[in-house]
Image 1 (cartoon, rainbow, N blue to C red):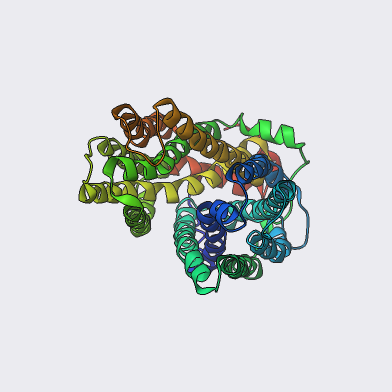
Image 2 (cartoon, rainbow, N blue to C red; image 1 turned 90 degrees about the vertical axis):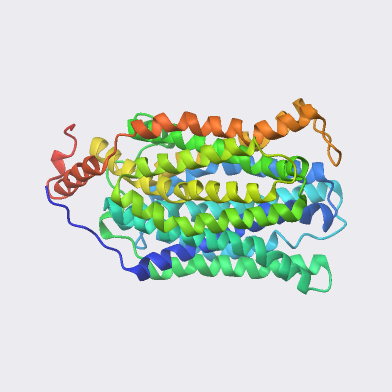
Length: 459
């Protein structure tokens, strides 16, 4: 078998990455600042704001498979994926800006409705863009290594957006005469940038003709989702990714408590640590791309997870005031987490190819949608579990913690997240789609496009 490498131009990769800049810019802004905007600026009671956001996030959890299934079934002259980016970019920018324009002094009922409606509209448009955007990566090239290169560049764009969203928002807010005006101005700027980035991808990236239209008879959403659970590589990969996401969420949620109450270096120390972590992730992305190309995606990912696992265990040994030691641990952790920014979205398209070769149907959106569902469930479980865990160990806010509470903080920051990553390792090792296997699948698919009737034969 010979492999014809499908190189993408660097300009194409950079333009595709621009979409991730805009999406992650909004992810960072809403993650860090939306709740505190509601409570401290719009003067909404924290429990009310949190409940409204929780109801909105329930829709956020289930809409990934639905929208992935929709874009798989879409038939338009603009393609299955690109049409959503084209027509949702402007409404997305408006909805992103409107999040930060909530009036002050609303009644509790009105405030609840405002938050619920505005966030649900924003999240719906976000997923209508992010799901086809993610699936588009699988369609742009079918080459094993070129996909890794595309995802590596896209991940670098995601990091840029995440850092910008974290940094630009407070700067723009402070530039205004008051906080309410500042958040409205900052939200408008960030919404515009996000909309323009998505619009650039829609304008300059075209879907390959072989993937521009639906293939084969359509499935119901339920039957399409069931098909993913019959695909062994997807099940193995999903278990691994879910455990990794759960472990990383436990760490990320608990880290601020560890920094303040165990290391006792304050919130400014948290900003420094996060900066070191993200900078290390950014610097190591090219290395993980190279290692995936030299070796295999699952093997490189497993090495990265091992580094992150070791760094988590090391946090348990730290004593109060050991800031420099924690900085070193964050460098090691960032090195390991860099693999997580490259490998998963480079592995999922290979699973889609495998499923198409075995079923005759290409369900890219459904596979990415089910993965998105599992990812969000893991994030939600991780975030909630930290709160339960701290309460169980007797955590008291804004106070010196007891030895028992301090032990709970150390466990939920280090050993427990490390355990989740350890559980993921055997599944990564067992992942069956090697470079050679994917090449065989690719040749099979290419021959099918010449002689379609041969596809349904099992390997």
